[in-house]
Length: 350
Image (cartoon, rainbow, N blue to C red; front, side, top):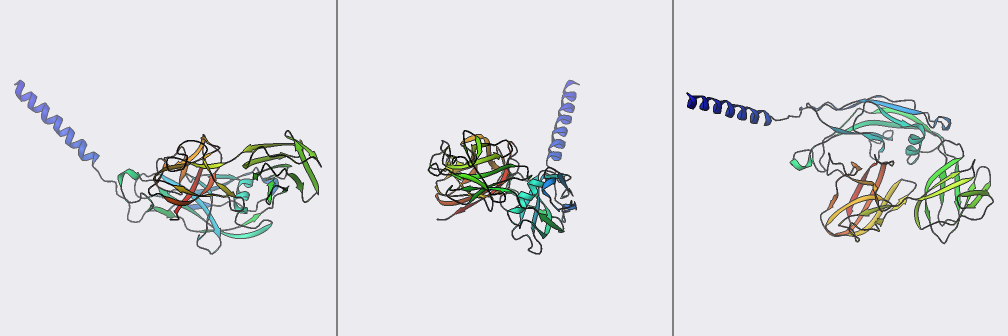
């Protein structure tokens, strides 16, 4: 009796195991015609400086590949009729039902490609990139991603030019701008400690100088604290200024200094918003970080490893598979940590 009971219980146990294995082995199948995301609502894009803090909301519907999937969404714009040959990313994130951006931020992004104080026809789309585990070797991993785009929406954007202060005698043409027109200016500028500079308001014809973070009309030239890229904030109503380092660099086992500081500093193109560097690398790994520290850093999205257009905070290291001379660019789509994000290109020159 005990023997028969043992055999019966063993049979039940094996049946449960095989049933579980069969369930675990079920294939997740993608629909033959996945439903692309849609861009359903586009706000009024007549942008005005007094409304700089107003939040605009774009609304979309998610991609449906036939199974429960994660995706990264990109709200993109291009000049009308150019088929997104040179798009600009307005927003990116892991959902698309409510995509929010302030008027001043949107204006600043679009000013990098389109003229101020003018109306420009645009094409807009919502693009979804499915998140596939790169470790599986499945289709959709690496550079051959599953990407689906919405139908194109047409809109006309009116951008406003920003009040500015020009840097005089800094060694290159530079400016800081006021997104809200409230006398508070900010921007990334490149300093040379041998070139003290002053600030001038080209509209009002007023010159500023200063020292010790105190601004003065017709004051002495400001002496930069260090070479390289810095963020300069100027508050004209309070006659103050602040300077803080803002240097994006490459770090990692593939770089000349390995994981140690100083990082390989990138240069910045203020007109395009792109950081770049040409550097000799060895086989290894790289990441991007700010001011030689880890509080702000970018690597491959941990859920989407292998995609250069999907860099996230604390992401995975980016591999360099062959030694040589490389030109690397970085476009920061979300500058504020700890949710910084961006995209990069890695091109081997020889």
